[in-house]
Length: 284
Ligand code: AMP
Image 1 (cartoon, rainbow, N blue to C red):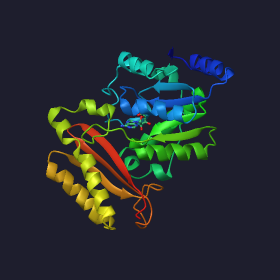
Image 2: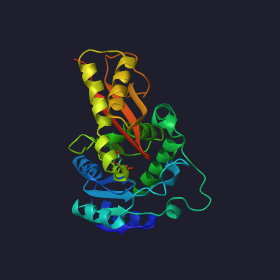
Image 3: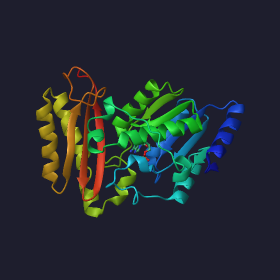
Image 4: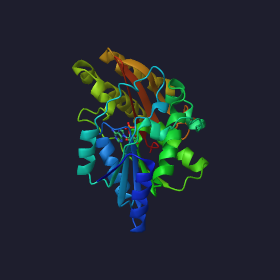
């Protein structure tokens, strides 16, 4: 695996791979890697990529002023060993000055699907995500880029970005990889102490309870949301940010229950904020 810290090094490596006929796959991450990230390397390969680039960059622009940018977990050595083991071809590890040189002021502004849920609670977050992802796409110039459905709204924002700005690449999405007790794998799980970790699967349990209600024919947004809240309240010590039934094409409340739905949630355990979601296919 090659390591690149500058834009030029990435461009050189990708140009050479392309000259040899490679199809370029790309997996952007913030590092502190786990199986969710590594699964996306396979998703990119399954989509035809035979030269896979992974970036690790904790993007300051997608963190709010009171969020965890400075304490976000980082472990370059462990991450690069994991990527080496996954046969990744190129690891791009830029620093903040490489991505945002002095004077950088241009940003992408997203709307629509970026506005509700995460967008409403984390102002500017998706603008920061879209800006860094567009920059990384321009640096790597992949044929295909892989994102995880664990961040469902982010997937929708990136899809919109690619369509709206005519970015010449294909997007592919990977399913959420979970711990045995249902907790979605996340770099932020490392913040949890033992008692928080024991409570954390309640988010997934609440979403599952909502799904079960829908499959049993309950077609009322407020009732399902109340049920999901109750599951979390019964656990105790977990603060609900939101637990919502939404239309996955808008991230707003669904017009009806005749379509695919998304159950999405965010909770706080101490200082740690976790998100998760599950899709509920169109009822039979
Ligand atoms: P992050 O490092 O959190 O920015 O995530 C980088 C990529 O990995 C994003 O596309 C995420 O959606 C994806 N990802 C994070 N956690 C998981 C997971 N548990 N399962 C699948 N994909 C994930």
